[in-house]
Length: 167
Ligand SMILES: C[S@@+](CC[C@H](N)C(=O)[O-])C[C@H]1O[C@@H](n2cnc3c(N)ncnc32)[C@H](O)[C@@H]1O
Image (cartoon, rainbow, N blue to C red; front, side, top):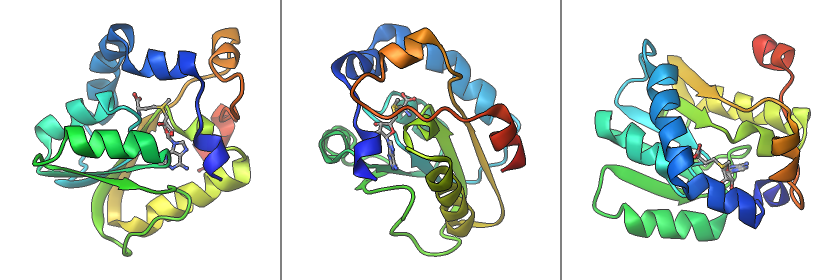
């Protein structure tokens, strides 16, 4: 599964860029507004942590699980002493207790999970680790030429809209 998390250099650069920051400054509030996530929230696939930086401003406690050990280590270092705990691990098999979180979020990571079966497994894991009645919100990209370009050398498994709608 770890292979699915790998990203190429262009992708790495993009996820740290000012352009991406501007995009998520609009997207993250739009996605989380109206969702009662509670105060103990799980983020899947934070990458370099631009989304984490925004999310943590309004939360008591945020746990981020990142499959790339290098990205997890540098984010952990950058946010040490803050309200964020960073775990290196795979969101399809999470090392968390049932019902541990009040809610969960995922931004632009589900398409890295390399098959619909693993994406379903990840969603089952999210359901397991959030408290009954907890909310899971997120957003992901749809298929395009640009998406194919930034996923050369890595897996791209875009989610058909119907797949998301059916859960
Ligand atoms: C495109 S980045 C998005 C980063 C951030 N959420 C954002 O929107 O800026 C996707 C991240 O998800 C991570 N990822 C992919 N599959 C994962 C998995 N199974 N478990 C945890 N993280 C995963 C990748 O390593 C990568 O850092």
